[in-house]
Length: 207
Image (cartoon, rainbow, N blue to C red; front, side, top):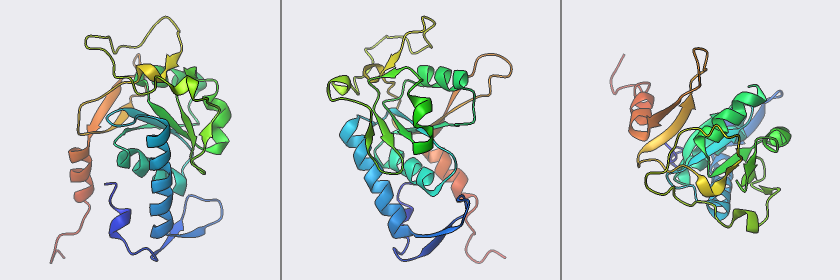
């Protein structure tokens, strides 16, 4: 899935229908911005087989963020900025991301999510937000064997050192609405996503 941009001609025009005023982009821009974000994740975190949250409204940069997470070997966790802050906090605490990709308009919200030491990378620039090298020293530590992966009820802050590692082949982590109780995480596989995307691809000679 993360190779889609590389399979398109760099000069092919795209229309960003998510912007208030339509803007013209190219696959070359999409590829370059994806690489910028993937490099930033790998430089400031240890995303391979770990959850990476993405907090953003719909935008072309958001699409790059999803591809960047996959290119860096991470598992995509969508975070909706229109959700109540309490839900976002519960999802982040349970998912234990190794890093967060954050749109500029959502930076204030992430500063209140108790993610001590978790790298926050700005979606538009790839810049590291509000962190020091010392706070990231333990980022990417794999959970010790046998350590519980259930949500903490102590209210303690999540840190990057306790990020969750998932089995190879995981692609995204979605959380249920929680309308019948506590929200639950549901993992999707890369193979499953590619199969679903392939269902919409026209077959040769199909009328």
